Image (tube, rainbow, N blue to C red; front, side, top):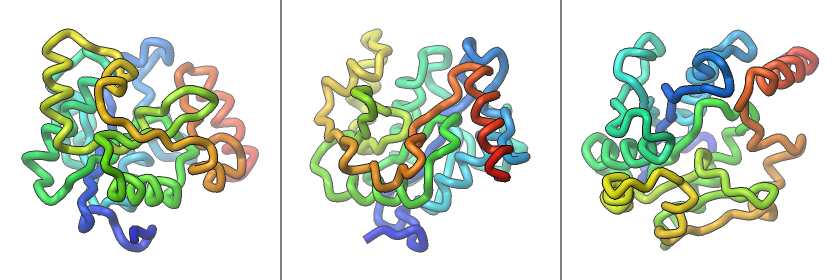
Amino acid sequence: MITTKEPAEAAGVAGYVLAGGHSSRFGSDKALAELGGKPMLLRMAELAKKVTGSAAVVGPLGRYEYFGFRETGDRWPGAGPLGGIATALLDATESAPRSAWALILGCDLPYLSEEWLAYLAERAQKSAAEAVVPRSGGYLEPLCACYRVKAGPAIQEMMDGGLRKISAALEKLKTEILDEADWKRFDNAGKLFRNMNTFADYGEIRAEWNEAGR
């Protein structure tokens, strides 16, 4: 069993954070937006490493190297997050050969917890699916999910065929959905999957953090 004191890497899960997207609705690179004095990308990479024992950043090579985490260049730059997922899975084949799964995180999910991600990784390792994805409010959360490394070539084929929507890719994969009953106990504040799509979102979350003294 994976616990927060026993990284999942030894049991076959590698950690990845997707960064370097256009952030067009945010207005600037949200990976560098700070909460509690720490850039979001660094916060997410540290969290992924706590859970899996490793963390790599998928994005433009060199842009985030000063954070000290291994980088892997997006093989489909400008193609959206599905390209980042495919890149991570193909990288895991080469760089994390012991890992059957990849924990994929967006860079803008400030309310994720180590306990929840450890549970997610554990559920993935018990699953026969190709993707284990939580669902919140009727919507899938594909950037806080686990993907089987062997699904990489299938997703690559989808990308090469012009597919760009993660939801469409998940329909083609064998996907296990984790509903509210699976994750609610890790979400006392009701904000587990809240992200920062816009600068206004960031302002609201930053105010919440300041008020809570985080």
